[in-house]
Image (tube, rainbow, N blue to C red; front, side, top):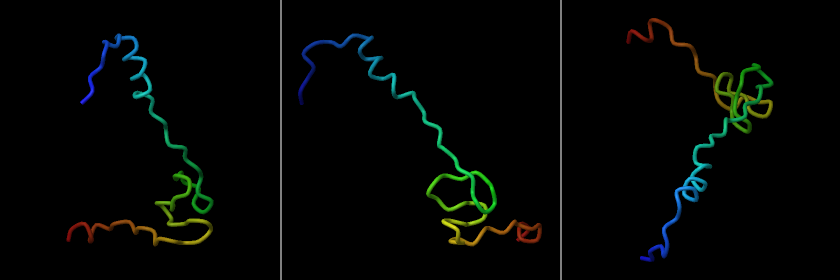
Length: 69
């Protein structure tokens, strides 16, 4: 396995690592059906819409009876 010929300085090492801490925030868009925030090109998790049609049935809210079982 090849080994480095010379030691890289701390500055050079840290400049290379500086981009590792950059975190991109996901861009959210508004769902045209329920107006909630969702990721672009993804099914809306609240209403199940994608491209003006229902793709996934929306999740029903759990009632107290269902939670007890």
